Length: 508
Image (tube, rainbow, N blue to C red):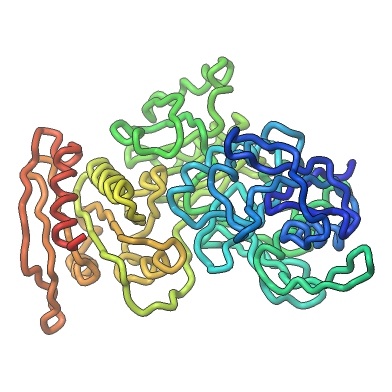
């Protein structure tokens, strides 16, 4: 294969220092939202981007290099507008690998970046460094990006692969390098995640040049083969690559909260329509088939349907509480909510700092709508609400799917504060007869600052100011908000009243 075309999105590359020719040397022009030829600059300045390109050259000489300057010269920072424009530029040009050495830790930027990354990753491999402060970083934490962090590794070990990354960072690599510039001066880079990312890029460049053939979807598997390490890859927390989906199952009333566009939706008992749609023009309109199973089907029936949809050459996402594996040889993305129960690191902090809100409901759809609208209300006011639920379909709304046993302590939620900068926790619990016992409810209540007991007909009872008295949990105060219509708690005006009550209780 010809040398890979690598684009660095950084603070510019002065290629003459390390004798690195540039195909494109551009910078972002905020007034036109485009990239223009880079202005006159000090060609002898050792910029961050120059160092990253030199790391790539040290470990792989065979590549073509381009630079998109999005970070300013004053403090090395940029904005989301410039990063989005750079990703769009890469979509529109012939790029094999995109290396991003600085992302965003702002939760609001994730929704803006995700569609662009989904477009770009269809044809390009995207490598991105995690923030050095350890927070979830976008786009590094996305499932269709190779997220990289620095680690101390033995000299003989090139990379380390993480099989269940809670934060989406899948690869660890060495972050300190000694470089030799054209004048023969030796330079030490120091350590950092951003210096680990170009080392991973070098490995991928070498693979491509040596004849490895793989789709960008299979990059991590190819890396595992290249470094001769086993990869026990588990699904990401969400099927976040989805842009357009064909949904099979009853998700009525929820699609407005999905993070992707629903092209078609049919009930489970009508999935035979797939055979017709596969030969129609509509098949080209969606990239993923989502199977939202329920209890009306047997396991054997579900497996049969899965085999059928996997024959359609589309990505597949399974929303259910049973574990399932893709058919042998399946070359597309395959995700299931049960397969990706969170496996999180032991948090350092000993207690929760952010407010903890529990929402109880017997109806899964009402529960998910209530949690989604509460999260939107917090987001509008600038708060990052992290949501977990025991309903698998919540993953289609970027909720974390957790089981009952996980609900009984706050380790998961403490980990969310440390990695995702959660300002508030919302835990949606569907009350299932015979599955959710009083002991579990007691554990949950001890974690909560506020508990909301919802009913589609009666409204909601909000309890707060908890006390622990001889191991027993009691609520000091409560407030009842009646349902505003027959649709009850899902009405936005009703949610608004609930939200205002929460804010007044938390003194926000």
